[in-house]
Image (cartoon, chains in turn cyan, brown):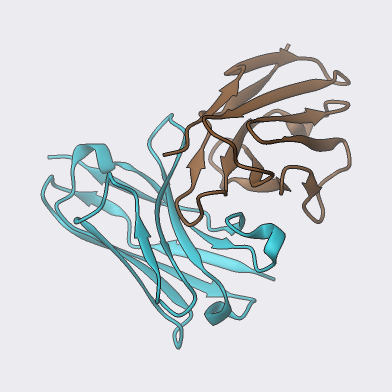
Length: 122
Length: 108
């Protein structure tokens, strides 16, 4: 069974940093691209960042570029999101999600974690 | 950037009703469109990919259609467990993904 479990969320002051983790199991983690998607309270879904299976390709939404860093450790089946210079508008539930492995599932997020809440407030 | 516009933003319907949700892309995205269902406090769940392919385990009352810029998600006979928020997402510009604003399906 595919499982994605996020951790690392919490309360942080504006300008602070936080590192999110996502532990993957039930599939060959090193074969899949992974993403972070966030959802502000009461709002819709916003794509944050994507990393290819071997970390060769990394992309960010403009809203987080230069402040957030996505990474992965395939030996540990783990995905990370280092968040620096946090702002109030970064407050959201952060989900890690797997990109489907077939051609038709390209760019489609077929499994999601339960999310971890990040609150940026003084 | 590709923008995704969903309509309506909310819909009230009864059990057994046929419900249709529309998603429009700001430019052509071929069939690179997915639909997700999200219930309160839960993660989104993939329903439809490549515009019309049903994800494994998803009931057949859900169907998707469209290509280019205009897409629809149809629930043929609304069930109590279908009351949720639905999002479309374009995958044409993968890895940069864009979601629609969501459509909340409420009990009438």
